[in-house]
Image (cartoon, rainbow, N blue to C red; front, side):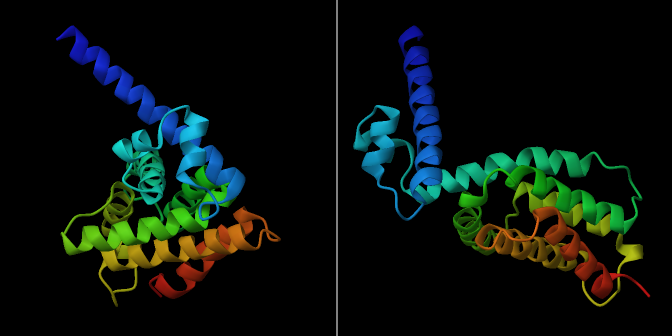
Length: 195
């Protein structure tokens, strides 16, 4: 039993080192420019160790995205009931801004991996933490929304608008991220707010 616990801790430590090394190499060389050998060398493990913990580089980015979702979903769930729609939208956009502001090099590739994961979840009728939290808030704010689409669909549209703003900032960072995200909020409000 004691050796199993030690082995588990060693596996967790190796996985953590690989995860952090991969993110460092992605930031330095870009996602497509990095090699598994570079990640393994940085983590001081074998190439096989990388594949034991992560089937692909995509899986590292997916874990990065999933780790970001938990705190953002908790912050959104902690908002008071009956919050005004503009305040809700700005808080969601603010959560994304705060997380991604220091990660411009990882945004586009992480978003691509996340969209593929969301497609898989949708086929299996599952929903990610952040998507579920935002959808719940849109359901709560249904009386403030135009009745043309279900609140869950509007939540998805809003999140896609935010993703577009994040992607624009990551590829062309001439406009401050906060301004682009406020633009996403305003664009959404002008089309989704009940008249």
